[in-house]
Length: 312
Image (cartoon, rainbow, N blue to C red; front, side, top):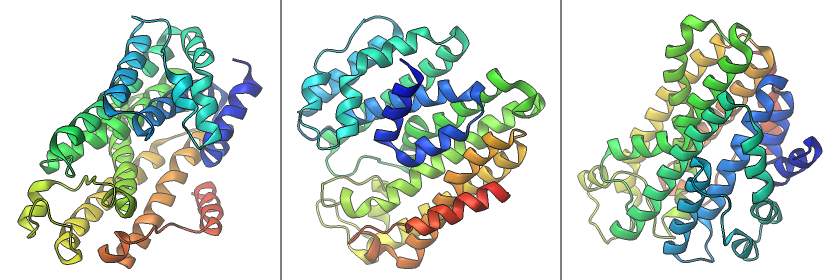
């Protein structure tokens, strides 16, 4: 896929991520960009509302087989694209052949990193869809389930980022002796970003019959399965997981300090700053507000965060 084509595709599905990718050093940019597009493709399928759950699972499995090398194409993505309202996501599904051709052209070391992260993400998306189908509103039974899920769909991305950095930049990315430590802190940073998304999206997920807050903790707080999640019940569980976000975001601070490459450090620091600002707004608003409306940082805060990341 020509450079200008994948830049346009990136821009159509994530303007902020597109800006970050343009700042990445050339050695990381192609692999990370393709990783994002492949993950966004499977995520679009996993979230598609116009198809049955069984079909979503079948399509996710087909994408998995293609990444593993057991298939050459995924049938049905073009039809799903017709049901999507987001033009960028529709274009992404229609360009599947170009994406997978690009994936096959990547050098073996980076393709291995791509395969590992995309297969892990698809495993998490498949688990999510299957559990929701089987268990109803509450996807996660215990805290361990939520932590494992956030690893599958986001923590593994922190590991991927680290491996791609060391593979392509070596010591210019970070000191080799820090690699194992950075795999752990990178994983926690990815999990923190996903946890912030989960808390922020409660106002959409709960009315849609989906909740990632652990069932055991909700019951301990006084919730009765089958009943709406009242503010007084959800507040302590919400606070517990907001605190876990803070803990994991601290690991993100450590990670950023260990990155030598200024461009890679900037791209690592920016989402972490935005996540912390979003989390602060959620905590300030409180659980009752979080479950009733969307709370997000304004555009001005995004640009302010960009400056903070640059000066870090």
